[in-house]
Length: 107
Image (spheres, rainbow, N blue to C red):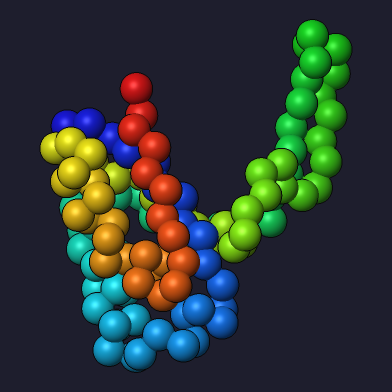
C-alpha cells in the first residue's frame, strides 16, 4: 500500500480555541492511525545537517523551512491513494484546530 509523509502545522492558540469535543475526536483519529500502523510524532527542535562535497559534517540548530505556523508533528501513513490519505488526515488535530496538514506521497 502506498505511504505518505504528513506534516502538521499548528499553534497552541488555534488548538485552544477549538471546542474540546472536536479536539477529542481529532485525538481519536490520531489513535486510529497509530492502530493502523502509522508512525506519528510530535515535532521536537530541529537540527540542520550538511556535508558539502563530503568535506565534513556541519550542523546548525534550527529549522531550514519556515511557515506561517510552526511545525507541530509528522506522520507516515499508509493509504490506498491520495484521496484516502486526505480523508485519513482531515480529522487529525492540526487539520481541525486551525492549522494545516501537508501530505507528501513517498515515491
